[in-house]
Image (tube, rainbow, N blue to C red; front, side, top):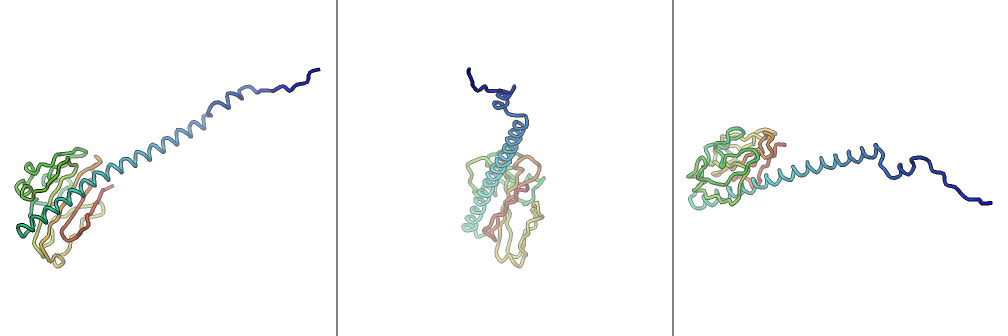
Length: 197
């Protein structure tokens, strides 16, 4: 008499062990979707930071050129007619367009002779447009620069004890219609950055 063990297999048990269930598959797809979204948001933020890096570097270059000019001629150079932007980009050099880079060509900008005299150097293409104005001690800037949180607060006339300059940069860096702004000035070493997100 032969006594042996017989394995009893339920129908479909081998198939259940090999395949994902629908719920597991949906969860995997959902996790991949969330991770993809996070990666895309991180990528966009990195691109925005890189573009803002262009503006802070160029603003520092314009500020350095203003200081060189003052060292040679005893005054800062009033290059742009206005610092205003956000719709009026004609005074910015180069005139920015959303998501488009432009070459630094001061001879083609408003205030071309002053930009050339200021001798700002840049080898690459730019997303931002730039402006710089100057004034005498005791007279604050008359232009308003709007940020997401309100206008830039200028020092009062009494606080401005020497001649000054302001450098402004503006661009729609991500094509959403909101302008990123960078501001540098002679009365502080800080560069104000508003990415307007």
